[in-house]
Image (cartoon, rainbow, N blue to C red; front, side, top):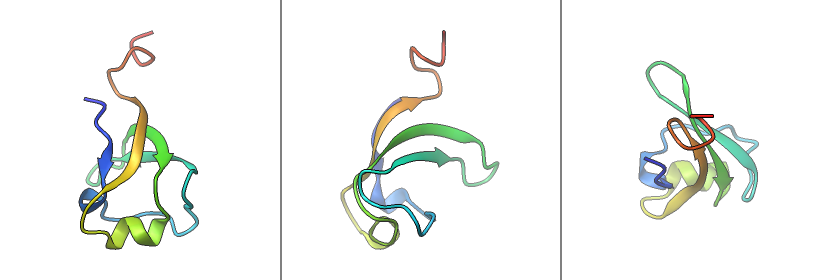
Length: 68
């Protein structure tokens, strides 16, 4: 639904991800892309954080761009 990605939901992140990087979010089981966003923290922090937003969602499946 376009919600931002919360850190407690992040189970893995590429170790090269840095704050403000453009990142993609994928489904854990099927590995399908679900969203594109801006990293709000580095990869290690995303994986270890117990609270807070990890990724600001800017494009997701079903949004206006997807439906074009």
